[in-house]
Length: 552
Image 1 (tube, rainbow, N blue to C red):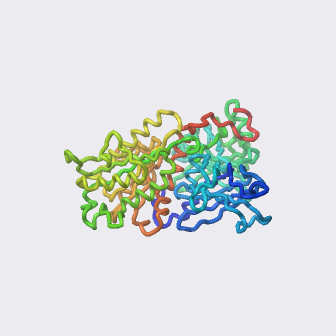
Image 2: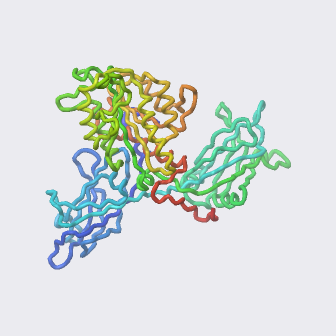
Image 3: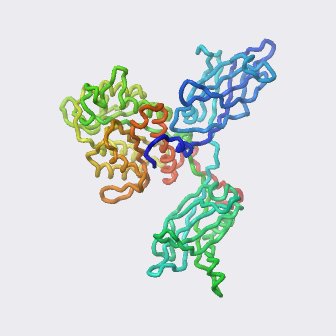
């Protein structure tokens, strides 16, 4: 997970999903004297600044006040950006579909996030001066466009050739897809050390990566002996189609001889270099972030604000908590930027907000997780505006103190994640936003808390404000390998994203949100898929989708 250095431009391509939007309207205004309106819908998009850009137009439907347009809009969807949409409906009077001569029937503005999380969004149409456009309404339906099938394998081997002088082989497998330009690597398993009869961990490969969705296309599987030098030795290889593998694994297991072509040429009576045993090969639906959101999964967003003494006295203009006459400081800017994107995915828009590291009234004890509205039984703030208001009111009432302990607030959020996991569906995911000026005091406890949280439906985003040394934060962001607790226990997955606010201070607000939230969709989908959890709505298991697969 790259820490957000420089511009996040190329990264955006990794997070993109194609969404297809279909449009229908009801009760449109009737502008034609002798017949009904002839509506057409135009879609505009805006992701920053005042400029709206036309994305496309539906066909014109003649004489209809309740049109369902057949032409859909397919657009790239970025979770980490607020993508504003504007649907304008016109009554087309000319044969060339010119908007110049057309009558305006109303418009509707929303964000793509709203459409995606509603799945089906119906809103009233309004005129340019925001008056209602009669009783007209518009309905947008969103659907993700992709082949999100994957193949799940369970594979072992027996009697592999011994390649190492002092020990047995250290085998791993590589799966290749056939392309016009040759074989392309689709998946590599882990290495099983010192074992000629290995069993590899169960894994999934997207169907598109493995065979382009064609179950009759050959797949090549190479078995190698791992060497630290990087020059791994081939043990043997085989080719088969997904269809053959599936048919073979129906009864007990599909077995394929592992053939080493060089050995075969040299050695008379060569039989094989071992047997690859495919115990399970089934085509499954890989649920995507959008499947979970549209299937009713809620993202719960918790905010934690650093009130430690190192921020400086809030009354001093040098303090990171100083709110300038324009009502700005880095904490507020970070809350607005991230909150604006996330609030579209939270149905009740009630955000629990906590402070840590301050002495709080009335006892002036130091607290590492106090609700900034001082209401422990209801720490929720209404919308991002509510969080901002509570923060502004809280500041003069507390004494900035210390130390900077992260683990209490991480454990607090984890408690809810643990409860949600007991529901056995992907009903809730938790995102904890920690805004801090830097230095962590309880590093060991924080590492333990993160490792524990990595097994729960949650992600942690840390935004560093100010100009401190953030090297400790970079450690928590598991880019340089797997994060381990103080006792050496490994995190199940990387759940921390660290972003230094100052790198984005002068850019548009969207850039910060983009960088901060870029990894949440992947973290959420991969967690729920790994745990075998389906979206709460429509949680019947997906059918086996491969074209010629026998029934599972």
